[in-house]
Length: 371
Ligand SMILES: *Cc1c(COP(=O)(O)O)cnc(C)c1O
View 1 (cartoon, helix red, strand yellow):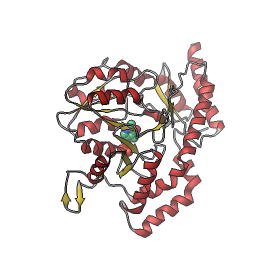
View 2 (cartoon, rainbow, N blue to C red):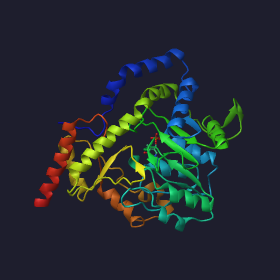
View 3 (spheres, rainbow, N blue to C red):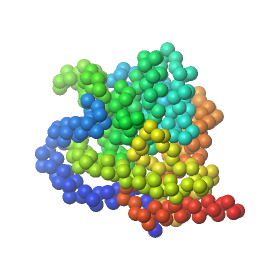
View 4 (spheres, rainbow, N blue to C red):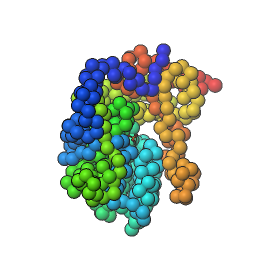
């Protein structure tokens, strides 16, 4: 039996007619960028995120980039973040000329450890950028408290966590700005690249709004220096078809996670830890195991898709070597890189598929225990 890590065709099959009609609408209108579909999507995403404002942009990366630019974070500034995240979080900080300052992660949640933040705050610190990894939000209360005390911005990288909650509050709604990605593998994925920035402050909204179109308030009258961060209408149209299904798809991922959790309990597999404060949308179902690489090969040889997010902590990336970090600086993150493995969790998995994943993984750990 083949079990891919993600099967976008399975989801597409359930909404194919609506998707084709939505794309045809855009083609017939020939309004290809921004326009009514993008405006409607912005309204929907603001609403499901409990935010006043939303600005559609070209990707999750560009949402982060335009958030940093709109908050005037640049050369000479420092941004505190996690080394255990997708590259774009930290790449964006470097691209605006600011310096990323890492703190280690929490052992159980893989999210930034708030108790380590204050020690690295300097007079150059401008912002904290927590990442809500794998679908679960970071511990936002202490982060917001520290930000308030030291007058720092908080930018939520919520690319993997749209509509997930922390103490009943939605991802993206707690900090100054929240950034979402509509990359096809995210829980709300487009048919290409797309992203969105959400916020509650009108002035910040206005800056984000002009930033995505070269900073121009009116055509050819530029208030700021922005970029081309525009969102295609065809992406908005496809996403508008998917939005009404998002909660149900996330619930199906949670049900799959519950099933795995039960089957793996009492075994050598450490299942994901979701704090009582959070409801995860399980963009990934990430287990920890000793001998991870061997298990990965074993699963792949049985045609089960699995992947390592992330194999190299960002403080050890070659392109960031000038920051001066070295192995051992963030031991929790480094250990996670060597132990994590993401298993298939997408909503359309059948019971047979889940059984096969569990049995294949467990047969392997029994083998290794015997030998
Ligand atoms: C996917 C992702 C991004 C970037 O989103 P893109 O739409 O691919 O540019 C940023 N941060 C995290 C944590 C992500 O998972």
